[in-house]
Length: 140
Image (tube, rainbow, N blue to C red; front, top):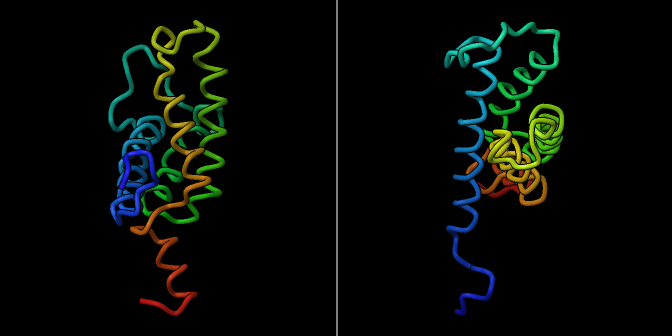
């Protein structure tokens, strides 16, 4: 096997699942911070109104993050969340500076591309999506 050839290891799919699970778990905390104040909001942040842009973002991040975490409807949810992160970056971070390290937009960019990857890669073998696919094929 060459380092330049695609891996045939079963760990390729498993690590896709691990990436999805970790990204979903951490992403949920951004939503719960906006919706429930857990973890606490940074000092100086105004309270979030549910029917506002930040309220919508918190709802998407919490409930979309839960779906990503368990791997349910991963592709369509990832598509929506990648779009949310692109909007978050260009509306909230980019106007402050061109550089993500200066405008604090690095997490938005990384989440956008992780979710975009999940749109094409799927959820991986450790997911509800994979369980549903296996049951439709008739395999345990």
